[in-house]
Length: 74
Image 1 (cartoon, rainbow, N blue to C red):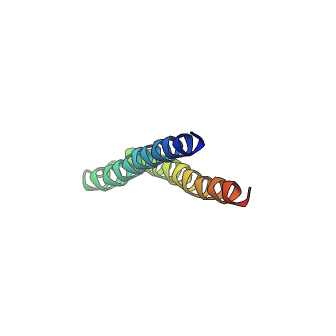
Image 2 (image 1 turned 30 degrees about the vertical axis):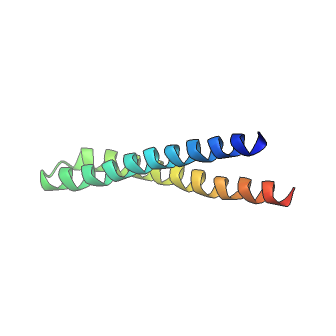
């Protein structure tokens, strides 16, 4: 039963990482689009979104690794 809980948590974490990665990629696409139409304000806004999603991804990935390591050590 404990294994099922870990499997569900791993799947949920994977889905969350995939969703956040999608937001990150959208922000990158937005920057390129706004650059093409020469809209500096929206480029900057998209850059801030990009940085936000980058930090979220980093946190999800590295915290997930740390939690896995902690479980293995127990």
